[in-house]
Length: 147
Image 1: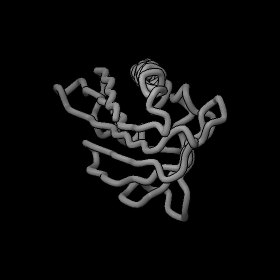
Image 2: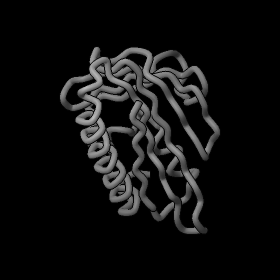
Image 3: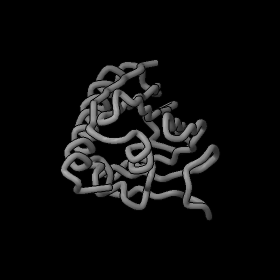
Image 4: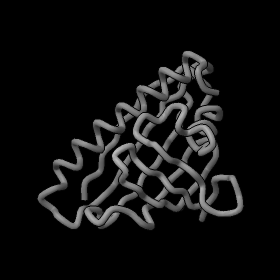
């Protein structure tokens, strides 16, 4: 099963970055991959068991469930419903304080496809999207376009 990771250093506090990336009310303000992002259920907070729906701009949707949350360091989730091509999918965000001014943000995916021959292609696609998402987060956060 492929594992991929992308990371970036952002000038900012890890708590602010954690809260921003896990806030589905403003997710579309910085995430260039998604056209829809919302929590499912009565509570508007990220904790273990919280579910969310994310739909890409291409129209492919995935429902995820948070399986581990340690604010403001880690948020991990797994797919509960998604495209047929994916047998399993999990992801995580990690936030590591570098100094008083910067945070290392690490984005990871672990997945398997129902079609093993597609996994190398999916790995490239997912990796490219991860990098674009992190670059957009950095640019918009550091330019105070989102908070």
